[in-house]
Image 1 (cartoon, rainbow, N blue to C red):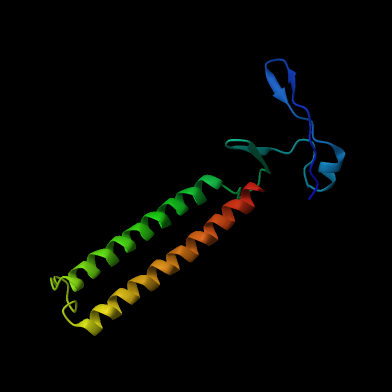
Image 2 (image 1 turned 45 degrees about the horizontal axis):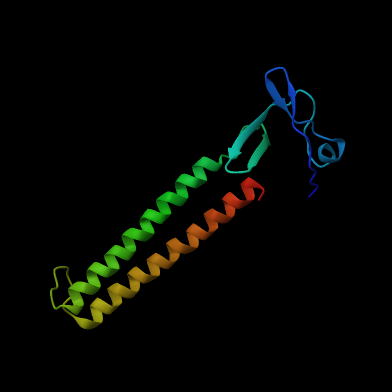
Length: 132
């Protein structure tokens, strides 16, 4: 993937970066195309040619937040059910039976691990979109 360091210059009240022929050779960007420019703090800018379906990093960031919340909820449920079982305070069905309680706890651990895998996949998607 070609990379170049280019100088930012002022044209009127606007800052401009000129794309070189080397960069343009590796893209399908031509004069007149529209582009989406996204700030990726603290130091990156993502420029994407406008298409019907433009990648949106914000959507993936929100999906990551949702998966992190789901992961925290599963951790909390595991802690809650383990506390019930370990302190002989079963309030949920099956938690009084040791084998059923262990099965429930293992099932929750499995669900937590699947969410962690989904989360890793979304982080990879975001990484690829950002071109990092």
